[in-house]
Each structure stands twice: as structure tokens, then as C-alpha cells.
Amino acid sequence: MKKLWWRIKYYFKRLKQMDRQGFKDAINYAHEKSGKSKFVILIDMMWCSFRYTAGYVDYNEFEFYLLNGKERKTYITLGHSDKVVKYYNDREYVGLFDDKSQFDVLFAKFISRKHIDLEEVDVEAFKAFVVEHGKVMAKRKNDYVGRGIDKIDYNETPDIDFEKLYNDLKANRQYLIEEFFTQHPKMSELSPTSVNTMRIITFLDNTQTPRVLIAALKSGLGGHVDNIGQGGMYTILDEKGTVVYPFIDKHGNQHTNHPLTGENLMGFQIPNFENVVAQVKEACLVIPQVRYIGWDVAVSQDGNAELIEGNSSSGPFQVIPSLSKDRVGIRPVYEKYMTDIKF
Figure 1 (cartoon, rainbow, N blue to C red):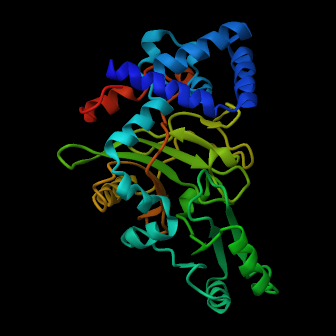
Figure 2 (figure 1 turned 135 degrees about the vertical axis):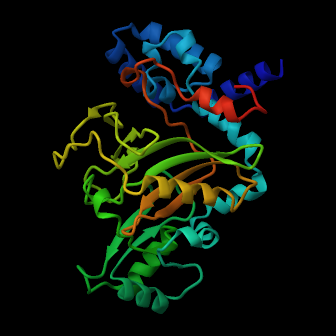
Figure 3 (figure 1 turned 90 degrees about the vertical axis):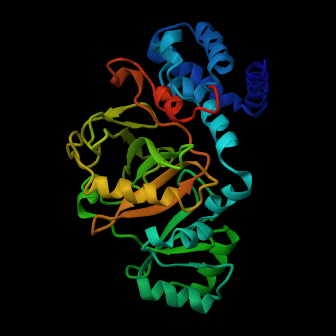
């Protein structure tokens, strides 16, 4: 009964927050992909929302229109991840991850980038920082999916009006200024215009042992960020850090070669992957009160993990059915370690 009540509450919460136009677009997309009538898709989406806590984004991203009930039950949806976050992540500590400036301080051992906070320094200190590093990134401290991030290149435009730029950045809440990160040359082969990161989702189990649930690799498509919501693409890595599935963009297109560079993506190997994963597991123990984290991780020139940020409310990543031989999602892995809750 408790599980049913949670589903009902979650269903009506999502219904209230739903983007009506986004919902219509999702129905059209599923209709085009599956060939099923829009009415059938509508009813099925509503059923999946209640039965599997799968919103219309989940429904299309994880191709629920291809799956039967048994297969659908193996996939983790946004509703499931929301439940995990609420149960395993202490609310008093999640703010330490949400504030990127605070995150840089707490996880300094795993971050080589220097940074300043415009809420704490004046325009002269800001100018000195930019001139010293030549190229920096300006970020909002509490934004997500690559929003509110801009590159400032003093080397290319030395005639910057620092007073105006300082005020503009503060007006746009881009308080965090970070030294530009130079990634491992192998990672630049994916996309030279962006820092290409992994989303490594971890869970600290009941024995305080860090577990890697899944690792995804993101790549930019010409912009300076790699987030799929900002025009990038992603794939799921195997346990050795190798690309074995095509990349997927936000339109659901699959890519075995990079659309801009033509570079073959299949078989790409993350440099020093085992060491990077070990460092991420070590980072899991810094704030053990937050047990479920989606880490955005780059690889430094010397092959170390470079934490970009930690997401205390990470959505799910898993191999989509059309690329999976058995059409089984990541839920069995979650259930193996998360023994205190039922999905």
C-alpha cells in the first residue's frame, strides 16, 4: 500500500509539472518511431508513467514503445532515481554538491583547476585571474545540464572591458570563474572544441563500499560543452572504459563516427580508465552522507581523474533497447546494491 501511495503521489506531481507541448512532441516522436497510433501511444505513456514512473522523456529515451512489460521492469526511470535520491542522499548535505564553488573546495584533491568566486573578489582580482590564466570558464554555481557556461579567452581578445564583463557575469549569476582545463590528448580526439567527460554513477553501499553502477561517455558536437541537452551526445561504456555502442544525440540519432570530424568512435578507449575509476571511488568517501552521485569526470593530461562536478540527483543512464541484445536495463544492478528500497 505504501508503494502504491508513493506512485500515486509521484504521478500527480509529474502531471502537474508536465510541459504540455513537450508531451505532444513526445507522442509524435514515438508515433514516428514505432508506427503505432498516437492514441495508443498516449494511453501507453500514461500507463508507463503510473506503472513504471516513466515520464515521456524516459518513454522515448529508453524506447518503451519497443518493450513489453517484463522488459520495461528492468529499466531505471527518472521516478526510480528520484526515489533513490530521496532515500539515500541526506538533504542536509546535498547542497555541498549543488554549489559548484563549494564543490571545488571540498573536492580539491581531485580538481587541478584554479578558481575564484565573483561574490568574494573585486574586479581587479577578477582581471588578474583572467590575465594570469589566459582562458577561463564562467559558470553559474547552481545550474545544470551545461546551462550558464561561457568561455572567456583573454589570449584571443586582450581588449576586454573587465569592468563591464565583471558586472555582466554577476548579473547573469555566473559567479564561478575556473581556469580552463586542458584534457588528455586522447580525449580531444573525440571532439577538440569541448572537454569530453564521463558521467560515472556511483553508490555507497551499506558496507561503505563505493560501487560503480554505470559509466557513460559524453562528447561535444562543436560547442564548448558536451551535455546532450546542449547539443552533445553520449554512449554507455563497458567495464573496461571502451566504447562498444554508438553515440546517441538528443534527437535519438545514432553515431558510430563523429558527425563533425568523421573520427571513428567505436572501440575508443578511455585513457587510464582503471585509475580514473579508483579515484572516483575515493571521492565517494568524502561526503558519505550523500551515497548516490553522478560524477562528471574528465581525464587530465597525466591520466588522472578531474572532477568537473558531482550531481546529487543524477538521472539514469543505460543502454537503450535497440542497441541491447537482451533488452535489459540497469535496474538489476541497482537492486543488487540498494537493498533497503523497492522499485
